[in-house]
Amino acid sequence: MKSIQAILWPGLLLTLAGGAFAQGTDCSNAVAISGLGTTSFDTTGYPESDYELGANCSLTIGTTYLSADGFFQWTATAAGDYIFDTNGSVFDTQLALYSGSGCTATCIEVDDDDGVGLDSLISLPGVTAGQQILIQIGGYNGANGSGVLNIGLDPCSVGTDDSFEQNDTCAAPSAMAAGIHPGLFVSDSDPDFYSFAIPANMILDFNHTVTTSGFLDFGLYDASCSFLGTQFGDFTYMGGPTGTTLIVEVIRTSTGATCDTYDLDVFYTPDPCAGTADDSFEDNEDCATAAPIADGTYNGLYVTKTDDDNYLTCVDDGATITVDILFLDDVADVDLFLWDINDTNCGGGIVPTSELDSSTSVSDNEQVSWTNTTGAQVQVVIQVDVWPSSSGDCNDYDMIITGSTACGNVGVGTPFCDPMDINSTGLPTTLTGNFTAPSGSGLHLESAQGPPGEFGYFLIGTGVSDPGIVISNGRLCLAVTGGNQFGRYNATGTLNSVGQYDAAGIMQNFVGTSSVGSGFDVPLTVPITGSPQIMAGESWHFQLWHREAGGASNFSNGLTVTF
Image (cartoon, rainbow, N blue to C red; front, side, top):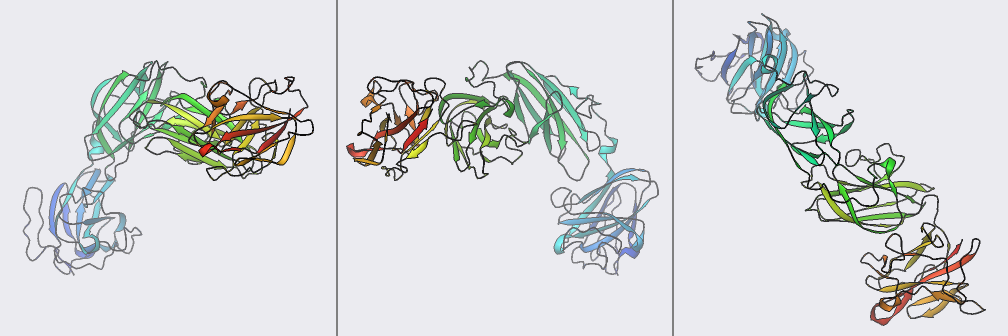
């Protein structure tokens, strides 16, 4: 059995003789204490009792707990909400509270590290005058030494609330003006909501300091209380060109105590992104307003924290869409997502995690890629946004899309001479088409997997020759006999070429004959004898010629298209 040699009552020093909690003390002869104050103890060298959380306690805090333990029997001298802690002890303490006295007491709660550092803390509300509480103090995994038991009223139950009350729900937030707001109070039973009227073209700068030992996060809502996301610390928020109302919820993340006190410092600064011309795809700020787009390269796009960019395209069954965005991360951190348009989380950004693919690095540029194995064409949304915690609020970017198709078009054309002989990259040059061109014949051609830096032009013919005529490193697969003709789409400029393959192997159009920047929009007039026009119901045949390193040349596969 164990016994306690001496106790430090408030204001008195405990004298230790051979170590407190002398051998033989257990739940049956706990030392009596009462009221508020600090009691010292020492468990140095003390063995583990037989009272492992008591026969009536179902709580556990691990497999090695409450070793070198001893007991106090506490009596409440007044009703109230109390805090029991071991803050100030010199070893890894553990603490258990039981309702009642002696070994028949029933377990209330067990704690390991909710105090300061490795100290323990339990909040016990609703204590009545004269109530008996059995207190067990031990160490984790054999830890022992000198310590203190502190018993005091819970400051969260007696604290004075701040002047912004009652602001307990998103539907009833308190308006907060710019400035420093000290001495604010939040508890588990009394949340805080504030509303901010952010002026047009201004940014809310939200900063906080917790004056207790806890931590705070912040939930963001729009004026209708739709949840926007959680900020883990200080943040900025843009008012946009027309201004906006932002509602902020203060979220406690502390353990142990049930409240926190804090200061807020909020102010408005001019939006450095205001006045910057938006791109031509606006307004495309969500999945419902996603702008239709096709394969190609799009330069000079623009995105801000409060105005995401969303683009709509389709991916045929078996096809792989790849999207690259090119930007400088030190201006603002931009993220990239690919969604199925039928996903209820579409446009949700980094939180929902149900996207088809995402890229959220903290470096320049992002890329997403997805292969459609559903058995049917899928409508997808490309979402570009600025990371909410980015130091920058807006950024310019370029976007490159390959592998998509116009929604409703499952590609167009029948390939021939496919695949073509490999080019200097080790891959065959490809030619694909879709009826997405806004003028001319309506046909838009794209070429990929070409040798970067090499020039090329598109060909059209009246007949097909497969496997074709070997020319240099490839094969001309447009027929040149039997009365067939073929011609090329000339352009004034370097080598009469339409364009040049970029670093990603995409043919970029240099002569303004592509509505999307890459590839080629086929005109109505055919560049052969008589300059005929493409008519509905006719079939025409296409191929692309390009240069190779060392003066050689090659071709893409061919494509027969019926208009």
